[in-house]
Image (cartoon, rainbow, N blue to C red; front, side, top):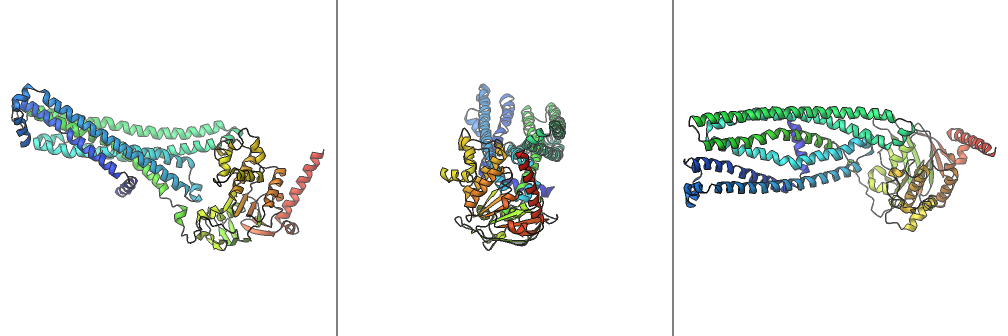
Length: 611
């Protein structure tokens, strides 16, 4: 546990980088405020014993000299408002420094939280796909929002308070022992049990809060997933089932929260009993010692004030320790993200392309095999060569490795066996950013932002002119559809482009890729949602651009693949056929079987339409 706390402490110290001076100023303001708070009890003691009771003044010599110079006891007896005014002035000074402490700590904590959120967002952008494959989006959102807020609250409200409790204890106890040893011993007799109780409470709360935080993360993940798939839920009339599932997660979160509150509820009354018992011991002992003449009334007053001054901050330490436990859990959850190795840090890049360099588009796969972890190989000994400006079509059943081939080329995953070369350069030795800048991708389920169509298309090249944007949209056969919208290219699409049809989304994504004008263009079943007429128009537009891009097309409709310079057929991660459309029709295999099936279905469809 000590090692764990030490590691979390290092993380916390690292988070405070750039704001440590401000925290130092907040701590200094807190020390001044605490030091000022010790003076009023001593003034009260002097007023009661020296001014009212006429006893000897117990104070440093310079204080005695000052009192004599201003008129001594006689002046103070006739002007009791002077000690009261001093106490009020000291309270004002203490309040000012408490304000400064809170202000500086809050500014520092807000700056740290902002930087931490930005750092998390940036880190998540650069984590490998294998990390996101396993992570739950809702849980990541929870860590970047709720956990960061827990850390911020702790830094803003409790870090400095830990120092305040320590200062109160470190100063009050020596003063008490200097006034009367026996009373001081009685004044700290329950200090040990209170501290032990606070530490035990911290350990318990830390464990319970971790369970509660994980339950909240699971609930958030389910909520996010359900809202993303709300149309599927409604299409299958699964609202009641999903509500019941959410109710289970919600109830689990409620139970964990209730358990945390139950632990918190036990702490306050028990700590009240210990604290009030300590106060009662001081009251009874003080009354007895006053009666027998061992201490004066002023000394008892000072003792009583000092006990309360250190006791209540120490009592609050239990609450602070609970918040520390929560913060440690949140720091651990945040650190799990930040400790995950970024894909750009995992590489030993030796070949970095320049910002203006353009790839030629020559692609070579040589004996490439790939599997996800210990799973069965997705690709087995794949070799192929696509010359610059040529078109490669990829066909195969689901799970044959088509998308994996594309993912390896994009360096979303890295191959271990074999070689992939771009223009003769080993792909895994090249910077990912450069590789991806050379490739335009259109996926079967394209992602559009909840922004205008103009912004979505120009995402590929923000500096492009509107004329270039319109040309790209025309090539993708979507310009006419966009022009029919009331706001044209300024039409704002819903989240993930939900206000557009599937075919429109694919064509907008294709326009985005064309506008990028990359050396390599990848269409991953990108025309599956468009009708045959529109598909033919898009393919004709792409053929007019033949030679401008090295193009890789994945499709299930053979009409999409017919004009490709080369077609490969994948099955179980292996290339089982290679050739042109005409050559593949002449040889037995999957391609000819699919062609015969699709031709038969098209003929039947034509007959039905004629009837």
